[in-house]
Length: 181
Image 1: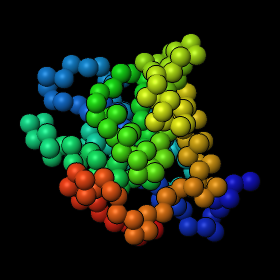
Image 2 (image 1 turned 180 degrees about the vertical axis):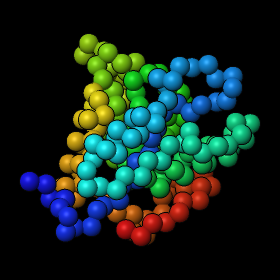
Image 3 (image 1 turned 120 degrees about the horizontal axis):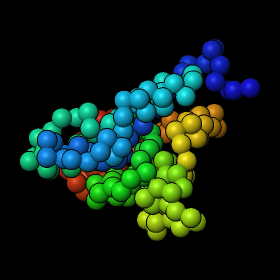
């Protein structure tokens, strides 16, 4: 029986969706490189009794020529999340690696959508940086949802921020909005 019952307040979990960011009209990558609306909806529906807030950097419109603004915005979103869900089904760029490194450094849980046969995991091989930065790998969104639900039931999520000021925030001049934990 789930510990998340109607008499308990539904926890709120902020999930940063790490993955490719659309670079504008010249970006010719297929839609499979980006988180889709259907995947976002499915993820929310697969985690009953938990208020899910998805933080998708593709929904923050920033002129790509303002690269420092994009850099800061993405990293601030990572720091404000309870966990990072990284899409590793297709090849990703340097930004995803930076997001993972920051999350790992700040103790933000990371789970990867990285099925066997994907760009970073094939026939028993796993990319070294995936193995080093992503402690939990799932084959599909249902497994991701089950993992998140378990983390909530065992009290590991939402993470407690307390008065902690992320070291990365001062290092990169980021403004992290505090949440009441």
